[in-house]
Image (cartoon, rainbow, N blue to C red; front, side, top):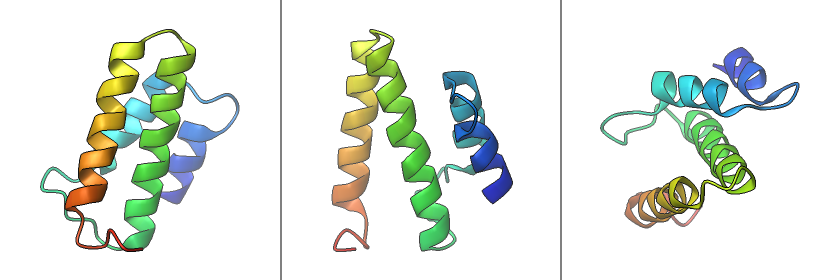
Length: 80
């Protein structure tokens, strides 16, 4: 996962690579393997959200922001 995260973020992150990373590693049930897994997925989500806003896709950026906020509120580790 670490190498694929670096690939998705490195040398000018692009939305397609971030989406591919998230599709592969974002757990469907919301259960992360560990904090390292959760942190990498969240970092990719935040970077994708940033790129959506920078590219003028406000609706997609807002959707990602709402998803991140809900995930954070529902997480059993929300105090971390």
